[in-house]
Length: 152
Length: 152
Length: 152
Length: 152
Image (cartoon, rainbow over all chains, first blue to last red; front, side, top):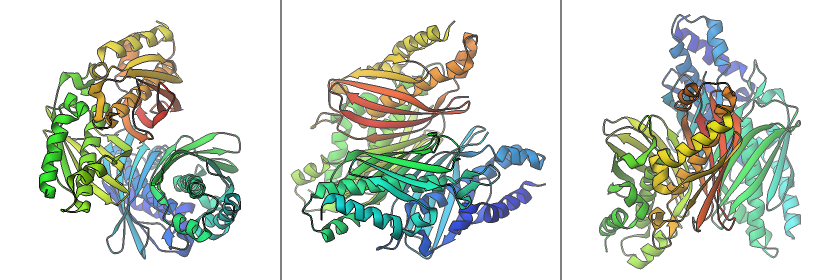
């Protein structure tokens, strides 16, 4: 299977088979080995500050970690190369995980739609680092994130 | 209203009126001006890694941020003093928020119940810092957190 | 005194009167209320890994924190406005300080000259956040930083 | 060579052969595979805030990163086992490095002597995580740190 087909398959998996992402309504809308995009729409269940109607910081953290994690997965797939058997790819993916995550909350989480983007800033064979941003539909920057991931 | 009555009221509010915490099943089980405890039980909806049945990292981040946030709130209430009118307390609380959060994921999020504890390590009139830990029911340390909060 | 004159004065102060920055050879080469630049040259005293001749991570942390701190100072000065008496500016500056700092080490610290740049990503009247990068003279990205500063 | 002899040798190396630690006056005073201690004395050259005579935040970051790095090295040595040839130990150590570092500045850096302690909180064969604290001679907690290190 080509890498692009694999990535499409993973995207589909992410959008249907990860319970917590499904609960929040996170949708992987785009990703390759250097960047990714995850979107979700406002839902009242995602509120943390009820009087002010602001997203819970945990929602933002979840969305940023998801965007960072999938760009890291794609970079792992790319490093393995086109001819790697699918089960080897999956075995490698199951070893990946977040080591640490930092979120900087810059503006209150308000809007109708939220767009998280991630880019790889370090891609090694043991550890990868991604930087993430979350904007709302008006282009306002709501949060920054930095994630360190184990990949091997 | 005495501080302890206020804290009981806030605890009740947190357990019933914060939609995202309710969605996850987070329950504030204890808190005062120096430490707090938040608990939740395993639910299949909280999974991030389906084949391995591990909590989504965003669940852990949410629970740690919640534990840190409430101990910070209690320290703010304590600093205001016993005779502060309730509406002034609430006005001050609504100005509080997370500035940044770091989560260190130490072990896979597995267990039947998860217990987050937070302690205040810096308590100023503008900024407070809390450290958090999440264990499962067997006492295994799953994650550490550090949160910086604006309080004034 | 105009803000630009004040900033020139602060830059001069930083380059001559801060002992630890002088010890390392850090030079503030440019800054205003939105971005700053700090440079330093390779010196054998700055090595952390002697066999591999790589900068100590603490040197990188120092340079990034310095770049972040000065862009934050400039944003404070700008918020105070042109007509603020110098002693009030200085009183306010002396209350500024780093709350927390994250450094992501991306590549070994090698090169002849190192250039740190910082930009403000959150500018409030209590807290400011800056993001920083350190490149060497070949444009290689060596480290990222994020700093949260108290400003009021 | 036994692990304890190796650790003594590394301690000696750290105290004499790492230029930047020597410049600051950092001394490794104790370490094994689970915890470490690094001390240094006040010197005017280490000042960042001259009017208030406070340590530069970069000094604190350097001392915390050093304490974290050496406890991680000791845990790597312990995992290799007693019979590992010294050159293999050294080869492995040269691959270790800081991935990311977070410092929380809690109180102004004032005192005559500063004591940094580090403990391992995650010890894997690719990545290790340490938590650090810096106190002054009066037992005042000045800063917390968290470091993620590559070890393999």
